[in-house]
Amino acid sequence: MKQVNHSPALLQAIDQLLSINPAGLSEYELMAALDKQHSDLFPKPNFSEKVLLFQHHFMLRHCLYRLQNEYAHLGDFRLEIGLSRLVKHPVTSPKQDLERHDPLREYYLNLSNMNKESESSIESLLNSFWTRLSHFNAAPEAHKTLGLTGNESHQEKQQRYRKLAQKHHPDKGGNAQEFDRIQQAWKSIRKP
Image (tube, rainbow, N blue to C red; front, side, top):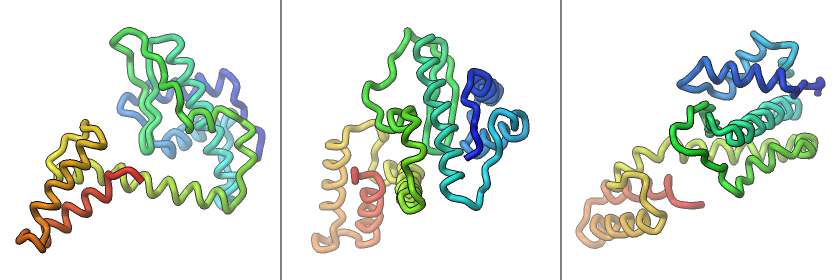
């Protein structure tokens, strides 16, 4: 991989791009903006090589988690690093600490992990990402189907699912199509 500069200048460039996009950016949008405006700080990867592309993604996530830690330390902003959006939010309440154990943050903050991945492990990581993203995107409709807000505990969601499944089970006189909808909704929000 071309040496990527993860100096304060790159962190400042990312911060600036997040600041002027209050609705947030996707990772791709952030990469494209960095390439267009700060190619000296964040060189464009060779998109045909999976390992190099992964390393490029890794370095960007590393910088994002460093910024997230910096924001938390200063207390003025918080950085939401989601599956599909990166959003910088002003903090309106007293300083909030980051979640103590975040495996993704720990993974991306450890630079030695960047060179540990092979093409096959990267393929596995990508498959896992797409599975999580499809569950994430399906969750609002699934919650609605089950009559949930999404704020319930896993146990409450499971109880609601079981109640509806029992009510609509075809063997108990229920509607088979409704039962299938309930099954699909539960499948998309249950814990793996």
